[in-house]
Length: 294
Image 1 (spheres, one colour):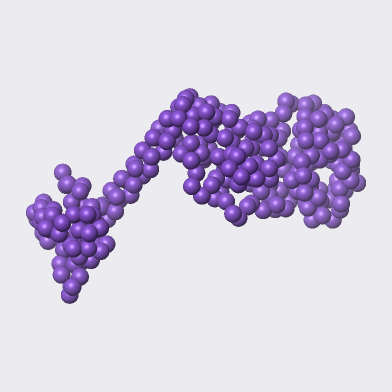
Image 2 (image 1 turned 120 degrees about the vertical axis):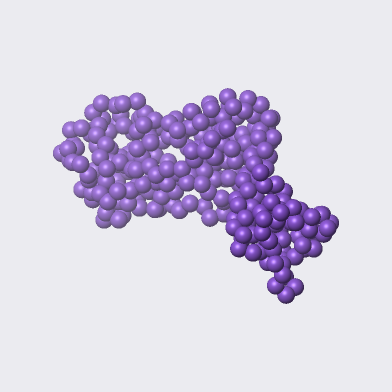
């Protein structure tokens, strides 16, 4: 089997253009570097380097081996990161700030998996409005924040973000509404309705998309409780624009229908972390995006 250390030495010679420079980068002596290169050439049966003026370059065989050396170096760096991540997960804490519907639907399972895998890490979360969750992250009061952006409110530009999923907004109507049987609905056709809305971000989204449809919504009821909103709709007191995840987080309520809008409207859910996240935060973000805890 080819000696991995010798392949990595060949890689450094290619990077630096000389045995002397490679030796300095590796904190080895130049004779040691030369010895390893000769041994690798004996194994290959052909020269791997050649002189071009004052620069040492690789032969075609050396270039072919270099591609493997680059791959090995990348794998070793991944292994180092994995060790660092896991060595930092024996003890510690993971503080998550997130919004209600995500906490009620997506979060519990990965949180439980993480807690079982890393019992020494104290895990907890707080339900926060999206902007408050990001503020907690910036203040160091949370290790990661799970938030969302939409066409009315863009994602923050000052934080590293990892996209999770896209959540569609649906028009929620009483089952008795004349438009309840439609496959899709233009918000403009609901311009004369009383509206039910919730958090500041949700109201901003509703107002922006209503404006695109040519009207200002008459917001008659304000509640951040999605169940309350749906019960009001079931009693024919108004209509709403709610994300699908909010419906998934609520018990099924009879007497309402959920209809996609035309054009469709979405919110994009993301994880935000510091530029240098704690090992627990990085591992949990990887889990959320489909990575492994192994």
